Image (cartoon, helix red, strand yellow):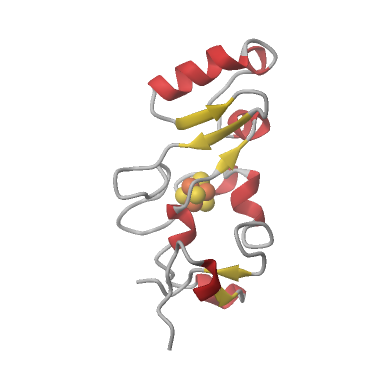
Length: 125
Ligand code: SF4
């Protein structure tokens, strides 16, 4: 059987919701694109910041360790990852999202959207 490789979506499994049970959370080790609306839901930005200077907001969030980058022009931020690539909001022990109710839209839609829609890297560990 082909080994699951997170960076090779061709090795991923066809998604079924039962795959999430006891999963190691490989999908939470990939860079996540988030938007201003996600920052508001997560409580990481205020309404005033959202309509103000996005570069200024990005600078603050970067400094505070919430994002790892911001693409000027697209208004997409990339959520910060830990050294081992885990999302900064992933609990390393339980492998569960610590902001599940407020998680970004990208996370809610995965794997309908993602590198290989309909497939996920479950079973990687
Ligand atoms: S915000 Fe939550 S669901 Fe989204 S990648 Fe991070 S840990 Fe996973």
